[in-house]
Amino acid sequence: MDILLQDTNMLTLMTVGLQNPEILKVDYKQIQLDFPVIHAKGLKLGIYGDVGTKTCAGFPGSEGYMQRDAQTLADWGIDMLKFDGCNADLEQFENALTPQVATLFTHPDYGHIAATCNVFRQLTDIYDSWSSVLGMIGYFGDDPGNFSLVAGPGSWNDPDQLVIGNFGLSPDQEKVQMAMWCMMASPLLFSVDLRTIPKWSRDLLQNPRLIAINQDTLGVQAKRIINVSLSIHKEVLFYRTIQVCQCGVKAIEPVGSRAIAFMYTKDHGYPLKVAVTLYEIGLAASTGYDIAEVFSGNVLGSYKPWDVFVCYVNPTGVYLITAKPL
Image (cartoon, rainbow, N blue to C red):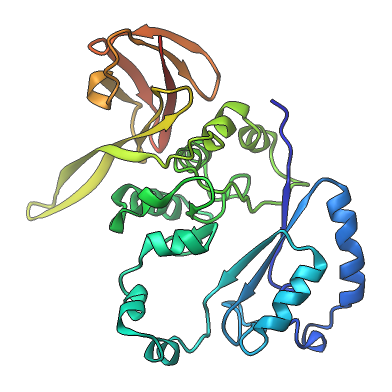
């Protein structure tokens, strides 16, 4: 599989305040002339805006200039618009809505959102840190409101950008983010300087077996099926609960196949031994399955539903396999 980078996102500075170019001191005529060059290179162009008076970073937004900005973006041939919701008078907007529609602010109707938007962010911004990545994975595992049910071709839940190749994640943690974003059928938008990205990180982003899981035609978002926690005794009276092992399963092609991720969240110690029967993780076909490890592509053998599968997962690491029915 050849890896083709199809999207480039030019965020914030040139994307908002179109109604008043002097604010940003940008030569928009020159920018417009550059767009055909971007498309000629086989790239697609994504752009960022805001429904309010200003973006979250304080640059001018589109409130009061929606139609003009929309036409400008169309004239430029923009392929993707990411529209934020900062600095908008949502209270005034909500008061103008019917009670039924107003509930969308506190109880999102994901079916309605999916019918309107191709991609929709969940939770908060992600940061270049393990705790941020882990928090996002946990939120998708909790799946509040069952937002996973609306994921599919044409409507994707977005846990924000990949921070692989920067400074906050170890190699194992980078594997976790890439694996879980692929399992969650998430947009693979990465935030990194491609001129200086480490080879390890670049190879990870270009792994064809991972991308195949992400781009699987079924478009199914993985579901967490195992979430093991331990209570740790500390200083006699205090206990803290930590997540230890999570398992997520994603349906993929061909029919009956699955991608399975075992993630170990503990941040110290030795690799965790995982021993489960295929039946325990939802693989029940009596004919059995061929199992392969995804990062390396190594074939691990054939297993029946009651056979025990064993693997070892590094601290803050992941072990990712595919199972295809025989």
